[in-house]
Picture: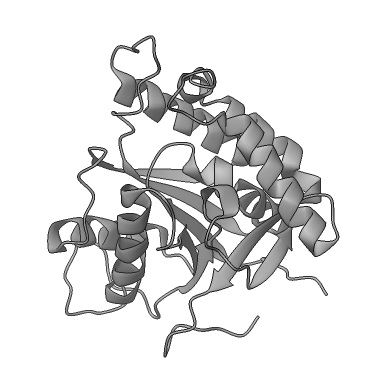
Amino acid sequence: MKLCFGRERVMAVVAHPDDAELLCAGTLARAKADGASVGICVLCRGDKGQPAKSVAHLAAVRKRETAAAAELLGAGVYFAGFADGTLTDNPRIRKVLTQIYREFRPTLVLAHSDEDYHPDHRAASQLAEAASWFSASSGHKSPSPALELPPALWWIDTVGMSRFQPGFYIDISDYAELKERMLACHRSQLSRAKDANFTAVADLMRLQYRTRGAQAGVAAAEAFQIHDALKRTRAW
């Protein structure tokens, strides 16, 4: 059985720069290879993720790193611009994300699980779901017109696979190398590998895609759950 993403418009909505690379870039790459349009929306600036040796103008550095990674993929990239640690599900941020959805016009959104470890990830999960629904409501005004239908929504695996029961797996064996190259663009975060309070991101990513691959009987995989709420499921 093979899912084809051809003609879809797939957007990852993540909290921080490098979250998409860590958790779902292989799926984005596979979708792109199938002929889909792909986009990455980063809600936070990444301004609090300082390495032990502080980086000047970190938010600007991480924005450039994200743009470089997206260029490798051939993805559109959208920056919502909120400070780390300030993300909450509120009308102001919903409105920003609603407009981003209406600009990109996704048919499928990949979003953080609300079981993930980081408060910004959990807030991003709530925002991604709410704004994806309201993006198709003409009563919610924005500069761009409403979507015809809310996009389908898949929950992304949690960092470290904690408290996440996969509903299905996407085989990314052919795209793991691109996923690695995309993560390598995030030098400011890779430099934190030896910090006492930080997990080596590259090692964590490899462990995760190999573990999920072993569970699915392939070399590398990413795990997801379907958001199966009323009016939100789709046949594939």
